[in-house]
Image (cartoon, helix red, strand yellow):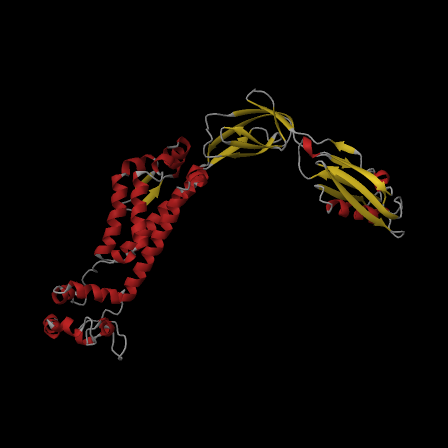
Length: 419
């Protein structure tokens, strides 16, 4: 069979094919035009490798996808303060004083913060009188209200009709205050048991500078409903850190130093601590190892010299940096796939060893990322030569070598046409 192929193609292979329209032109070889079958289904060649191109395309698509996933997993561990590998958890010993703690990756776990809160920040609150919902205590006609807030004056006008009872009137007034632009929230409370309604007015923002006044211009809405009754003064938060001098804040969201922000909930003392977010870090490492293994597995599914290069580059990096990987609970099994010992890995995250070993510029991550980028940018370069088909008794590689070795330019054009 081989001799027939050699004598049938011989020196005339390229003269009939490359750049022409003969039997071995790129179009004919790919089965394009003229009703010709593609070269891999031409019985006259004694070959039937109809699965070769589909399998190659599947392999190229697979390593492209897997390398892209590996790059994404690596980037998630390398995105600075947003890196999953470097996330830090903050906690408060007294949630009644501090309900929420946010710790930046720069927070030092060895520097706890002792916090004393003397006063939380608040906006001004006015609580109105309770009036009978079915009564008619407001003046009929236009009720004009003046609000002064933040050095500005705001006018609120409400028309009360003879058919409006107190419940209807207070809802009109609350809606008008909310639309006034004065930065206030007015809410109506109706007690169904007692049959009474009232209005509560509150500054939308906290801080000593968020006070307001409210008064009647015409009508009696403010006086009748007690809207000028201040029950909480606008004020700043007052607190101290590690026994230092008092600090003030217009809001209850305060920066305490050491990369820690806290949300004040009440007065008293609490201790704020920060530690590595072990769960987030382990998830990031697991994602990276899975993407590494997926690329390695996909490469090995295609038996060629090109896929060997991917496998050798990945497993070579794991071997080269095996000591540092093993120290943080990462090891390779007998097939070269990476596994994670979560107990040892958790300790490595808490000590900072995992973050150091798996850092973006580290040897292992740098080597793996370079391989992934090379595959992602040009997966075709990792096709290479497929192994001989022993079952058919035909060596496709030998066929190409014996018949095409004399014209490497033509070989390149052929594979350009193929892929």
